Length: 120
Image 1 (spheres, helix red, strand yellow):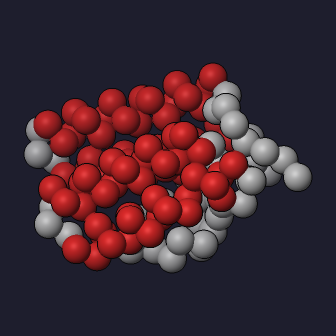
Image 2 (cartoon, rainbow, N blue to C red):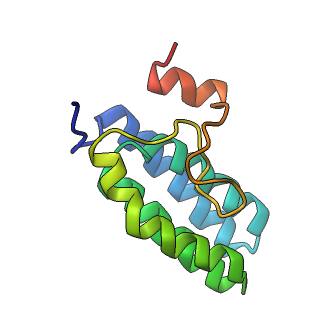
Image 3 (cartoon, rainbow, N blue to C red):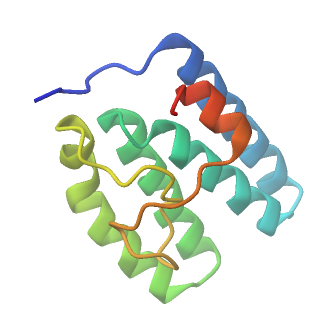
């Protein structure tokens, strides 16, 4: 069994870039674009417990900010289980992390992120 503990440097850079874009969009009240960048950072970081858990924390805060009860409840559930599933390398690749998709559903990975993850 493979245990994921530390995100590789090139993924951490891409993850952080998406979070910078998220913050920029959030500050400029571009909420749809902000969410888009949270989803992309989730795809990049979901295999690593710290990054994955932090993403769900940001998604929870976003849900509160948008007064989206479904998102808030969905993120609380994901916060409880997401990190340990990352640690044991049991995440559905490509999943965007929002409450609008089933937590265990694999999803298509955007081409640029697929190249970063080096998935065939």
